[in-house]
Amino acid sequence: MDVNLVLRSTRVITPEGTRPASIAVSGGTIAAVLPYDAEVPAGARLEDVGDDVVLPGLVDTHVHVNDPGRTEWEGFWTATRAAAAGGITTLLDMPLNSLPSTTTVDHLRIKQDVARAKAHIDVGFWGGALPDNVKDLRPLYDAGVYGFKCFLSPSGVDEFPELDQEQLANSLAEIAGFDGLMIVHAEDPHHLAAAPQKAGGKYADFLASRPRDAENTAIQNLIDQARRLNARVHVLHLSSSDALPLIRAAKDEGVKITVESCPHFLTLTAEEVPDGATEFKCCPPIREAANQDALWEGLADGTIDCIVSDHSPSTADLKTPDFASAWGGISSLQLGLPAIWTEARRRGHDLTDVARWMSEGPARLAGLERKGAIEAGRDADFAVLDPEATFTVDPADLEHRNRVTAYAGRTLHGVVTSTWLRGERIADRGTLAEPSGRLLERTN
Image (cartoon, rainbow, N blue to C red; front, top):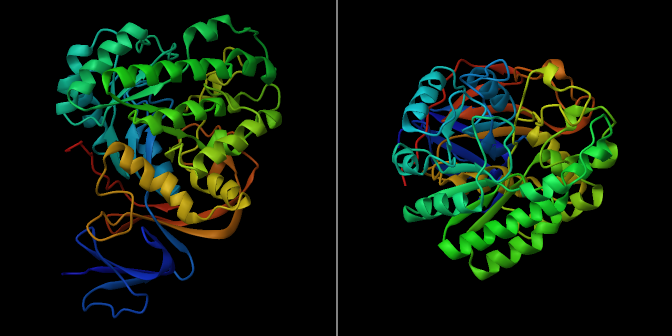
């Protein structure tokens, strides 16, 4: 065992719990998790981070990078820098908002060519399921995408249309045939169309336009389809806590369903959104405090499998003061870990829970077997956090391209002091290394 690095801390989060440990790294892989005071092998470099907590590098499976085609919104260079600064070592890019969308193998190759030299962290890709590309799903899967994203209501961009129930069934049947995964934006278009639609700056009006019933109905329909076809499905960005009993019952029945939520649903509430503050706009929307409490209960009991960002940036001019017309999306790549830790610690959770939700859970969802845990044989990916330190969010300090954030001015617990990718330090107290990320392809 040719160990070249030992990373030591009094608090290392492992699958067995948090303990003092020395992590031996060989060739970018965790060789062993040793006792804290283990002798450093000859030729190895010791990096002692003291009492800072070493978490497995975060995995974010829901990121809109928008590159190529809408690089004025974001790009692989800026998105992966922001991720690295926030303790994220792996992200999966969503298939839409880039031009072209990742809906054919040729389009996937275009995106990979753009990303290859710009990635500061490891990057994989979702494919897209459209009404007319069922024939492209198996080739995309064979080319290495991790699964397929679809919408059940309009996506917001014309080139990525939604699926109706028949089209969903056709795509799900194809994907189930090779045991792939469908990840779903689940809002029912009929409920959205029937909801009151008012232009203007009042957040209450926007919230009324995206009712919980739209999510609940879409999720129930998805459960029914997954049950009938024995298909694997994943609910994206769960906002409505009313759907939790449906999901819990489906899981208990054996339906192959998983679900994620996002930092903004778990840390921000409708009651605190000022009128006209469209930096808080996303779809589905940020809901009331009582709804948030129930989402945390769903995390605690395992109904919600993971927390990911749904980083969906745009240029500042698209965030008009009108909630009806403003672009819907919240940028949080760099801030997700401290935002969630701030709320989790207030609610009595610890960093072992946070690592399970933000690293282990997303890695399991995507089948990233080398990611998500600090144990021998995994990639030596780490997020080092000072959990007691606080900072106030200043948009000027953010690395993503358009520094619009719903977290501006908030004081958060948890400062990421360094981020490590395969045993190399890629972020160090705000200083970022040159790109060293790899492009990942599904292999299982």
